[in-house]
Image (cartoon, rainbow, N blue to C red; front, side, top):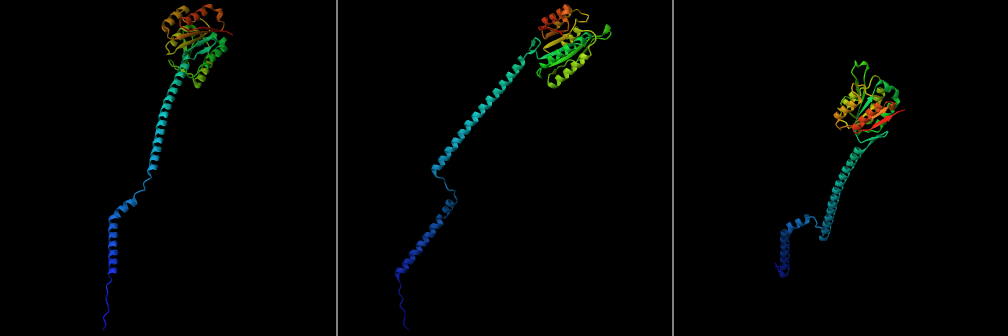
Length: 280
């Protein structure tokens, strides 16, 4: 049997060795670098350096604008509060300095007791009384406080003189629309009940006990109290001690009674008020 020829090709074996070594080196490098590939693959892409700087600059600008706006808002709020306070002070000052004016009498007083003579002789002057009291009340708003007291004596002095207050004795009420209507109704009823004498001293004495700035006295004749006019002026002035202004209003034919006029003029003058006469 003939043997086959076996020749070994050296070049072919060397190429195979080279490829095997290269493959091994590749696998080894892949295993070493694999962990770094994963980290790089999962990390978010970094923005370009120039874009980051631009965004940071914008953020800084917006923050500066916001800080400036907040500062301006705080200043505006302070200015607003100051303006509100100044407005309230002006309103208060204007209200304090506002004058009540009617028929030649002016006063800055803000609280009053109105004394209404309800004697029988006042029946002849119902229209004058109604008009005068309406004019007084119409000048007032809720910043004014008043009390109205009707006063009248009775025949023979068997029954003590009567004081009829609009509000509870010792109290005053603001002249808001509701109370203004109530006060006018009270006066309308009082005018219909005119009767008896004129206990002026008693009425003035009671009015001085109220915490008010002034007193208005509406009457048509001399007091029928036991005391005479000059004595009443002296005692009332002493008790008042300049605390309240007393304004006196004579209604009707007051010129026919000089003694009556003198009494009212003296009472007003000695107590910082003013005398006013109203006739038909």
